[in-house]
Length: 307
Image (cartoon, rainbow, N blue to C red; front, side, top):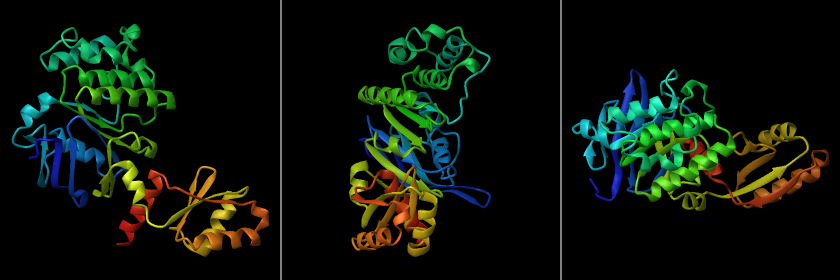
């Protein structure tokens, strides 16, 4: 176990019947940093989190949290971690204050003793401390769950898709809070389906079908993008996707909102200009541009599927 890592995973595998949820996963998270695990539903993110928080046993491999073995030292790990699962799991019929007091008591502490740890977050929902948790908005539920995960002063924080279904303003507020927690020395592993959140992490890992495809600093992952990316806008996106896919193949043309992203080598620009001239009714605008983190993930997925 490397002393610089808050989390270290070595060759972790886990199956449920015939389904391989994790396949020889290895990754490391430096102490006091934010590591983002990016991937679609069913990729294996929650299974990994449940092993690291000692709720599941791995079939093979090893994992360490705060230098402790996840199987051999599970009782001690549970005292040192905070876990915020994907679904809101607090008691809906208890008030905000009652939920927080209960979770503090589980770890043999009190809200008063550790109030300074959650003050910046909890103050935002404290005016509603007598409201039942089930009646809170999505953003307020998120803040309450994070307060409950922090009230016992964890060394490592696990957040499983914490911003799913939360509005854009609350998402930004949440990530601002995570930066403050990181600055206080807490190691954070967060999973998310939102690619823009990957850019807010110190390091990122892409996971698909139980396998980690790549890890690294977000900007360095973008620098490793193979080939060129072209952004295309059109007045008829559906028709344009169909025509270009027939010419280039399904794994070359992707729709990003009102834009199309097309991957290829530098000669692709010559093809696209010719395509534009032969289809004036599509009103195409073509630009050679820098890929985003989602483009890199798509390329990695396609490469993995082909291999």
